[in-house]
Amino acid sequence: MRGVSLNILLAIVWTLFVGEFSLRELVIGMLLGFAILSIFPLSLGTGNYVGRALALVRFVLFFARELTVANIQVALWALRPHPPLHPMIIAYPLRLRGDNGQTVLAAIITLMPGSVAMGFNPERSVLYAHVIGAENPRAARASLKKVEDALLPLYGQGSAAAPAALEENA
Image (cartoon, rainbow, N blue to C red):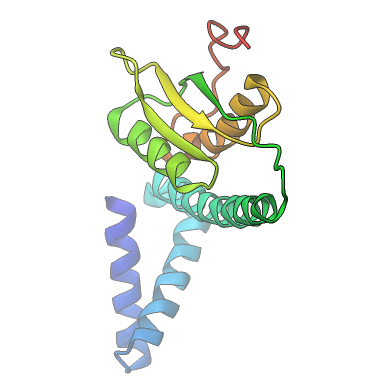
């Protein structure tokens, strides 16, 4: 929270310095404040804030790209007389821990055309999903792994190795 409040404070100081309180000046102040917080993360104690903010930007760009590609792919399938759907239900071992992160992962997977998150096992270590368009379960798990890899830095969990328990069951 320290990084957010410092960034807002720097944005307000910028608008006071410029002498014009407008949305444009607040955005410029936020960007300049973020740049200052990025340059001095150790001395200001904002390294975690800067890292997560950059992870959020990377994830939004990743999600926009993946969503666009998936929509085009599903649209092309809809135009074909016999699309290669290969529907399947897979079990995906989760590396993402915590209810918030897992819920966001399930929501993101459901938003992507061609996949629906069905639920978790009781220990919340496995996500069950219905997927179309993948050649085999291994390819379907790889596509879910890309989404989880993009979410892991956002929740400060890095990228740990995937559990091998369900990886071999293709």
